[in-house]
Structures are given as C-alpha cells and as structure tokens.
Amino acid sequence: MSVLERLEATIASRKGVDSDGSWTARLLAAGPEKCAEKFGEEAVEAIIAAVRGDRDNLTAEAADVLYHLLVMLAARDVPLAAVWAELERREGVSGIDEKAARE
Image (cartoon, rainbow, N blue to C red; front, side, top):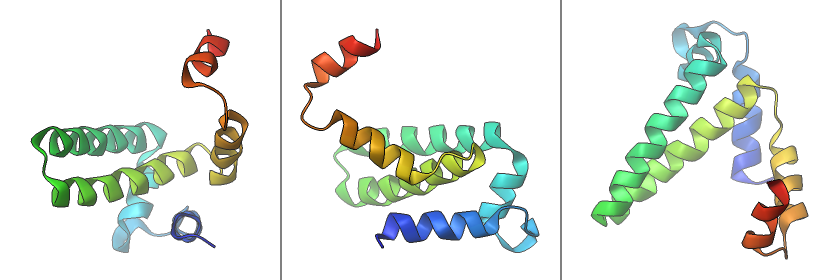
C-alpha cells in the first residue's frame, strides 16, 4: 500500500468523527466546497514556491496539495482508485490527443 493509499484510508476514517481533534474531520465537516477552497489555496501556494524556485517550500506545499486533493476527493466520494484508473486510461496517449478527445 502506497503512502497516498494509507493517507486516503486515514482521511476516510475521519469522516463523521468529532472534529475537535482532527483537521481532516473539520475540513470534511465543513463540506465539499470548503475542501475545494483549501485545495485551491494550497495549489496557489505551491505555484508561488515553484515560481520562486524555492525547492524546500515547493516540496512542503506539494505535500499539502496532495493531502488536500485527497480530502477534496473524499468529500465527494471519489476514490483514489478512480483517479489511478483514469491515469492508466490516459497512459501512452498524447496529451494533445487526450485533450482533443475531451472537447
């Protein structure tokens, strides 16, 4: 089991529990919109770190992005396995061709 899969399981275990002692439970209790907002904030922070060339901060922010992505997915009941399946479906397909197929 990968670290992302373990994190997904931990996040799932926080659904519906008392939010006093868990940031994850607080986010999930606030609803999918708040989870999406936090994901967006973290993504912007990662972008800023990348633009500044701050590798250490980018590393930390990327971890935050991945965590908040998993929380956002959990808030909408989208399993990580579905994301993996979509990536596998796209594997070996040109990004240009894949994007054109969506339009």
